[in-house]
Each structure stands twice: as C-alpha cells, then as structure tokens.
Amino acid sequence: MSIRPVKRASQAVPTLEGAGVKLRRAFGFGDTAETDPFLLFDDFRNERPEDYQKGFPWHPHRGIETITYVLAGNVAHGDSLGNAGSMGPGDVQWMTAGSGILHQEMPEGDASGRMHGFQLWANLPASLKMTKPRYQDVRSQEIPEITDDDGTLVRVICGEFWGKKGPVEGVAADPHYIDVTVLPNQRKRLPVETTRHAFAYVFEGSAKFRDASDPRGVLTERVGIDEEPTVRELGDRSLVLFDSGDEVVVQAGEQGVRFLLVSGKPLREPVAWRGPIVMNTQQELMQAYGELRDGTFIKAQ
Image (cartoon, rainbow, N blue to C red):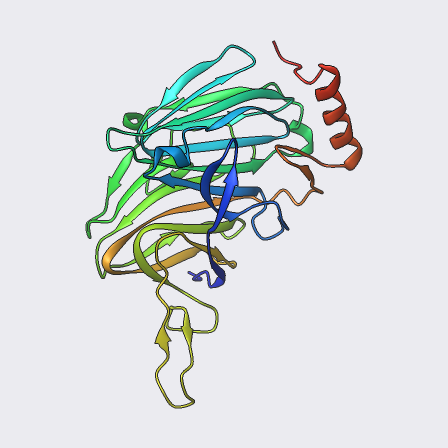
C-alpha cells in the first residue's frame, strides 16, 4: 500500500454568491489541473438568515454536474423544465446540467435559523457536454452508513466503499464521495484508487494528514535541526489536496474529526469556463452565451 502525501492544504475563503449568500469557497474559478474532474467546492454555512435567505435565484448551467449535500436546514429548488422539490438534512441532489438548464436554489434555515450544506461542481467530458439534463434526488435514509470496529462512521454518497455502494449512479467522472467521522485520537486508513485525484474537506473537529516531507505521516514544520517537528493540525474549513497513492491516512484530534473525502478520475480535457457554464473551447462558450441571449439555450423539454 502507498500512502497519499498531502500536496497542499488551505483554508476555505469567504465569498459572496447568488443574490448575496455568504459562504466559504475551498476551490474554484482557477487552475483545475489539481482537482480535475472537480471544478468548485463551496461550504454554505450560516446561522444568520439574512446571510443566506436571498439564495441563488434563476441562473443557467451547461456542461457540468452540481452536487448539493445538505446537513442543516432545507434547500428549495426549481428549474425551467418544471422540476421542483426540497432537500433536507442528510439529503443529496446530483444534477446533470448537460445541454443546459435554468434553475434556482433557495436556502431555508432550521428552527434555530441554521443553514449548512456543500456544493461541488464536477466537469462533464466533451462527449457528454450536451447530454440531456437529469436529476438524482437522494433522501438521507437511502444513503448507506457503515460503522467500523473502532467507531469510524462513513456515509457512502457515491461510489463503493467498504463493500457498500452509494445511491448516486451513472456520473461521468465516476466519483467517490463519502462523509467520514473518526473518533477522538483515532488513526484511520482509507482506500482511494491510485488513478484518481482526491481531496478532503474538514468541517468538524481537527486532524493530521500525511505529508510528503514527513515519513511519519503528519504535516509538520521544523523548529530546529535536531528537534522533533511540531505537528500542524488541520481544523474546520480546511481543504486537503492529496498526491498519488492508494490510501489516505488521518489522525483525529482531541475532539475527533468529520470530513468529506472525494475522488474522481481526471478528464484531462481543455476547460473553457465563464460563470456557471463550462465547455471545452472559447467558441463553445461564446455559443452558449449567445443562445442564452437569443432564447435557444434550453434544448431538452
């Protein structure tokens, strides 16, 4: 087995999106080489309704898939094809925008005003950019949960893990998307196929992850030539990008840790990206925005 070293660790940054939603962006709208086939990851977490209630009014998508995972509150959604619904705690919606769709997402807090969820954008290969849009709406109770002997809890949203298969299927990037909870001070090894790009996003507690510069398996910085390294523990809203290998090692902190572990097969295709539309060439991008202007953007009815 080869342990994946940490390529880079960073904090999600405050960002304003939609009609004024305050959220944290872990990555997006930059170089996609390290995260391919994933384009963007947002953490929308708030306890003040005024920071999220204006939501994400009508906007277009083409050429991507959006994956929304709700932890607290609800997200009401609707689209130009007549679909409508609501996602609650633990629910997932996997939307394949394909040839094009107009939709809206409107967060609604829980009884205490809290709202928490994540949105991940996955790229579509050139051969599927103009595929027919579709939804996979998954309720919390449909997502398999596995508790290991040491108390580690894993929710399998997409892909196969520890013999359980997630309910989301037929996604172009063949992603594996799991929600992992490791108990305090526990050390855990989690398999990830070597051919995939992988990242973790910590949203509760803290943990140490292996780094290439430290064979003992934690991010460190030297304090002196003969001194022991000091451990850098990664906490809430930390993004960890992994290098190649076939397993991830995590050492949970004093309060334990909960994080998303996501991996996918890189497409290695050119990316032409502007706002919510992602194509392969600038010409395709200009065509998409031209269709938006002249009212021919929506292909599927």
